[in-house]
Amino acid sequence: MYKSMGGLFHKLRHPQRCYVVCTIPRSGSNLLTDGLRATHRAGMPKQFFLRKFEARYGAELGLDLVADYPGYVRGIVNTKTTDNKVFGFKLMSWYLDDFITRLRDTCAFGDAATDDLTLLRNAFPRLCFVHIHRRHKLRQALSTARALQTGLWKVQKGRTTAREPQFDAELIEQSLKEADRQEKIWYRFFQRIGIEPFEVEYEKLCQDYEETIRSVLDFLQISLLRGARIGPPVTIRQADEISRMWEERFLAERPSAYSAYSPAAG
Image (cartoon, rainbow, N blue to C red; front, side, top):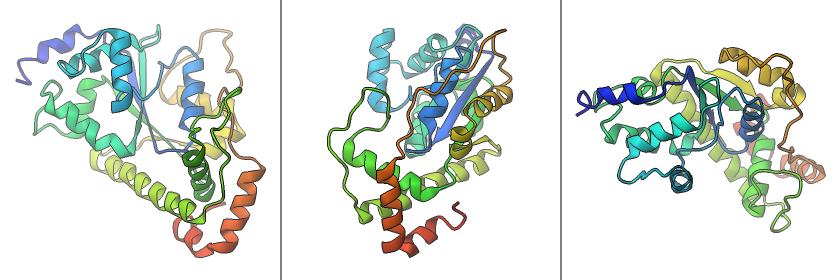
């Protein structure tokens, strides 16, 4: 079946390049993808393949993802590119395996013998990998704990929290453990497919936003239009006095938990 569908690849308006932002929650991926999208040269990277978002995108584009998932994938790639034919998307490690399984089960991009990298590049031509991570794992866990309580995962002007967060050492420690588990999924995946992703550190992105966005564009071999500038970030950092107080309190109450998951934190 895979061979018989090979001709369908030629119907795809092949982008010049595709890329995926590999991430876990509270790694700064919104800050990065919003910045890339704002250049109007790096696709429109979002979580197009997260199950709970697919129905919305399918309805928007008139795609029946239940009857024709390969058609949904191709439709997203065709329509969510920028004028220079660049397509980008974002994946979280917690649904990485589910997404690859769904691609494989369609038999449109490969079969049981097709390795993961080939499968992905059949679906997303010339796919490159960008991995964003946070150096300071405790602050990432604090951010996760706050978002879990408030329901606010993306901080922007005008958006308010549903309720005020409360310090919860157990929740913070669980967030540390879960972040460690999810990051290891990515590192094992990169090792398995034999690639080294372009690494973006969240702390550096915050410190030098424009330069970091430019470095990703350079990696993707994307040029800005003449005279174009990279504007200020749209996403607002969550860190504030509450975060600082929580950090001090957690370090005082559970120092061993912090050291177990952040031996090189700074």
